Amino acid sequence: MVCTMILEKNIEELQLNNKIINKLKEKDIRIIKDLWKMKRKELKQLGFSDSEISQIIIKLQLHAIDLNKRVY
Image 1 (spheres, helix red, strand yellow):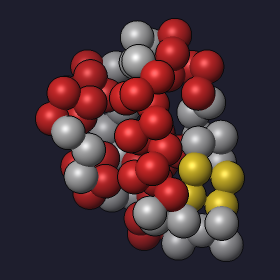
Image 2 (cartoon, helix red, strand yellow):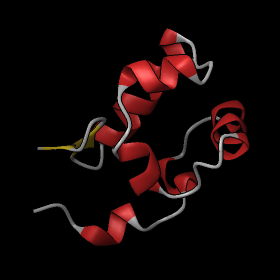
Image 3 (cartoon, helix red, strand yellow):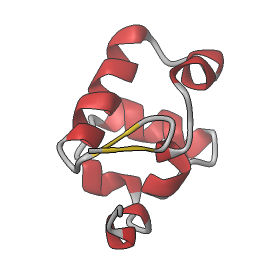
Image 4 (cartoon, one colour):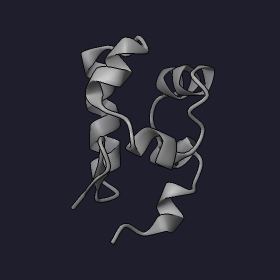
């Protein structure tokens, strides 16, 4: 089971670059849970580049989670 504590933290905890953090906040994505439940396609539709999405995926994986509510 995913540690709900990480999901409730601010997206800043992922230590993404400021450009990505700002874009997420503009889209009203402020906590990790909001990002975790998204799909790659949804991020693409919000205007994120493939490299930005890859960075997001890597940072989530460092916390044993991934897009689309996947848990490791």
